[in-house]
Image (cartoon, one colour):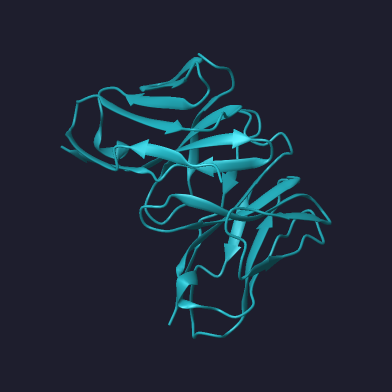
Length: 116
Length: 109
């Protein structure tokens, strides 16, 4: 069982470049989300989706786009990368009853992004 | 937005000691969660709390949902070297999960 799979694991971009961070889950989870993790700031929610075709903004959405055309995939797009977007990005998913012990939030292993 | 204040930021302890960390917020949450993150991996759920006042254990870990619904603590008893990692609290309100800044735990053998 693959769980939540994120690709790539590492990426270096130049300022202004665009790219897509991929996230896929094979658990038929309705809820998917993207977080960024920065030293001393914990995990901050970027965007989330409660089901295919539905997305919403989190705490720090600026500079990022998402789409949810299928239940399995939730890609995160950086339109024009900036050094402030250097971070570790985590994708997470769960059943719609997010947070309950029967449906914990499953995290991927992260994508480490550096923008120069 | 909602904020969680987690303390301490870091702890250095000897193997066998007990550990306590906590999170406080000015907002009310419906659920409190505690996660552990090992280097190079995503956070993994340790304990979930769903009711104010709830006290839940998972092996050597014990966590409580504060009666005001604005705080939670996590205790680890008789620490071992594999307890090393970053511990995060998280509070849920609706569909959103807000994370604390994390507590970096180091256990010296």
